[in-house]
Image 1 (tube, rainbow, N blue to C red):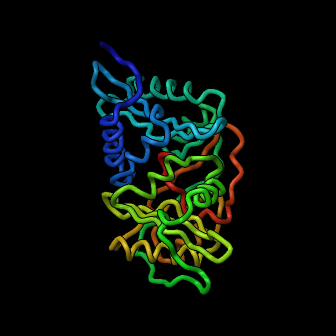
Image 2 (cartoon, helix red, strand yellow; image 1 turned 90 degrees about the vertical axis):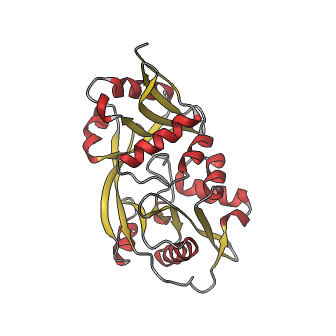
Length: 280
């Protein structure tokens, strides 16, 4: 049968998430279900004699943007060209779009050779959640109770592209909590915490300032009973790393956000934690 690349099945997307966990990326335990609705044809699997051995996610957002992730070759088939053939199939699906990815340090030279240029460094911080109350004038509301058009607009402001189907799943799936910080004028913060194999993952963390970000994380951790949390803080907002450091969290993992073209315009000052290394 040889090697071929095709669209992954639902079961294979779950398998890809297991591979990611084995790589030490610590995805959320129900993330794969949200990944699927983002772009059902965006998960490719490489099969060798019918057996899954490689993967890549190439998620289309809107008409001009895409995000690449989950680029994995099973350890027993590495250095045989199967991963690169999977990569080529994924990039072909992204033809004509600006493509982004969060690349681990070891792979960044390869991504550069494929036309990706670094925009900023993202650092994963882990530690005990803070204990904090919301600032005066701010109330925390279950994200599922907020008018969805307002939440989607706030998300788009910090991500740079529409992803409504993904967002609806991201806040609704089991083993996660999602909160919005509100004032009388509207939304000033949004964060999601989901269970993972190790520290509970935070993402996104969008907030008007560090005090709002801290209040969101504190309430989410209390609601989930989480004793350790992890956030991927983007270097494009210097306040994000300073915020994580001020909470006593330890840097444990580093990636680089890279693009093949111009980066989308986003509210970088409000970006304290990216949503997902896999889908942006």
